[in-house]
Image (cartoon, rainbow, N blue to C red; front, side, top):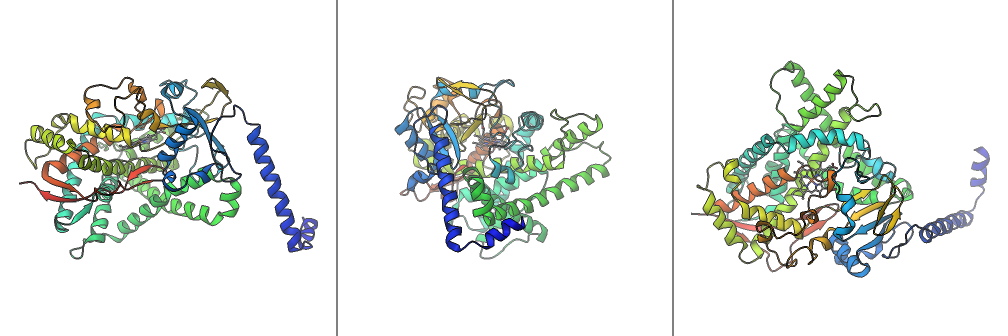
Length: 532
Ligand code: HEM
């Protein structure tokens, strides 16, 4: 070591740059040797070292869905894209995704991201915890079973419907105070509404996101928020506002970039996540105290936090593994699972709600049908809607499905655990596949008039193959919150249009949206007038 240091100290600046230059040449050579020797070369945008093919996604193409549609037109049903140093195979035809869609525990496509394949991401999100990023199938399965049982249960749907109405009424109070003749940005209201609602449903906490948003808009009559709660809102907002860009950064950057060249950025992302972790750890400890004080025998509310704690205790009591290889669920696992539920639910569902309002307001005839259905099935403008009445709103449900067909929220990714043949090529384990949803959702062989916005297609069962509807993903790893998401979106739509004339503003402009990790509408500016 001292010898190396003395050699380094003797170098001039020019020597130093020469060495850097030689290293760079080696890096570039290595990248292209690997590139030209890759298995099954496919067409796709030519990659550059460090940044891969992403330099081609400029202007409108920065929105992933536009870029992938464009690439499909140019390169066909199967092509490759390099995300920094990582090669991904894009599948744009239903025949190519059948193996990925298999609902079998023996499927070779149960992994979204395999452990070890994105080192940067693993620095940010533990790949053996929670659900979304979990790269260990048996660990993922044990958590997923509990969450499926919770989110899919009729009780949880009832609770979701009941609480949606309570929080919606609270939101209306803020609108009243802001005066209804002012324009409201419904995508932003929906995000705060959903964050309050999801914290209540899953962690049993009363939060103040709507209040905080109201305070930011109100000139007077601002509401008090306890300091600790305000700090929590700030931490949550800070952490969630950078999640999308952090994920893209870690997915697309080689180690040289995230560990060294942009180390401060990596640090910033990790810090905001850690602050958020601390809040969740506090919730978990508070709940553990409550459970201990209640003697564990009182009826515990079946929210996600209690069920995950039950699972942890069950494994400890029975000295049982939760997922093989001596794995036991721990508090970190509970924390990460809860955070993922919050991440995957609130802003995704709010982004979809914005699109719903935009499409209802823009496509001729849709608003009239929505309002007619509400007149036919909602007996009053203010009564609580029960689950049986709720089932009647079939057209509104069809509108939601159609919105999700034309504007899917996430990209679907899988990694094979065994060698597999797809598209006539053999792929070794660890290959990364992306399902290119847009070309499948707009394929005229599957959908009649795919470019038309026509909710009726979901009423008339026109879909030739339901497996080609991919808005909630596919196979066993598809979205566990789909029923909850639809329930909330339907409730919000019914509650809004039953009581208000909704005038959509900005219709002379394209719909505003952002497409970071998830695709979300950030528009839906409206004027509301209460119905007589
Ligand atoms: C309309 C709203 C929603 C849409 C469009 C949506 C869509 C999706 C999609 C496309 C995936 C990836 C599936 C795949 O890779 O095959 C996903 C995963 C997931 N979603 Fe949702 N989601 C929504 C609402 C929710 C809600 C309300 C929750 C929770 C209450 C939730 C929890 C999750 C979780 C935990 C995962 C990861 C599942 C796993 O890896 O096992 N989502 N979602």
